[in-house]
Length: 415
Ligand code: UD1
Image (cartoon, rainbow, N blue to C red; front, side, top):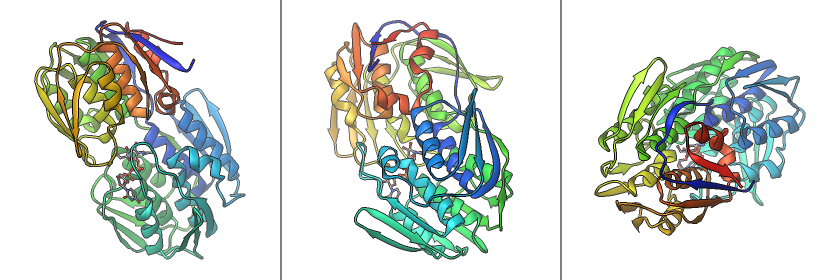
């Protein structure tokens, strides 16, 4: 089962339920390190990245019990302060344990996360923030060593509203002495979910969702129960797939305010979207129209939706310009889409997509998670059969993607 095979041409129809957000649950599992006791997380997706994060916190001394769409994390004390390299190498989000571990134990040794396909992805902002809270940080031989007796609240300005840096600093500051202000903080919905979780544990975080977050440190936090928000990127992926195939479907469990940019761009392309009872109707009327897209930090158009939207635009009427401003190398899927007959040229940070009447099935490779989703969408609209390899990338972040598309009538299967 290391390939997905799609036969294109079927308009998607029916209903699909969106799972809990990968990018919300990962930092929340890391935040369970902050409080002794039991945390029950609900609406959690079953994904390879979630397994990796659970494996990592287990190495650090937590006990994790997976349920049906839930996770219980029992923290009876942190037993290790050196997250194994194997985990940090496998998943960049592993670095999110740094802030909570440092706040709880005062001493952490963690490998530098490697670069990845979509860009260099440094961690300088994470480290600058923690240093501002009083941590002594040394980077040598590919490892970060951080020490602090007790972190102290401080003013932190982020040069870029990094999601991970905001989360790491917020978690560390939750147990620091005094107040921390994070300026130019990331405002993604996943940041708000993490702040809500910390507050439910007894923390004092305000301003999450805006560019300035205030964290008043408390002496200790306690276990709690928390339901994870729906995955806006999974929802966006299904919205684009339904529209691109000229289908009509209802997406359950969607917070539409988290998806304003994607909804605006799909509407501009000619799709019809209607909110109803905690979900969203999506209808595509073909051909869709070309639209220009520029990825930006939230509430701008999400970089995690750029590859999927590009797949849709390959068969739209007219020429679209896609500008990627968040990651420096996030056009790996272009080469694969071109193998399917798409007309795309890259000029620096821009991809110019000339819509064609049809693209055709081919053998292609998922180079990363969202690139993989883009190729599935391309396969759904292409004429003939598409075979997608390296689908472990897709399993990192989509729960039952193939099964959900099958339920919408797509001709898609594992091979
Ligand atoms: C998170 C998401 C990822 C999404 C990304 C941007 C998770 C688990 N992952 O990743 O799906 O694509 O946000 O929305 O939530 N940067 C620095 N220095 C740093 C940190 C980041 O220069 O210390 C740069 C990165 O190289 C990148 C940009 O900032 O160009 C955005 O990165 P960031 O927001 O930190 O993304 P992640 O938290 O890694």
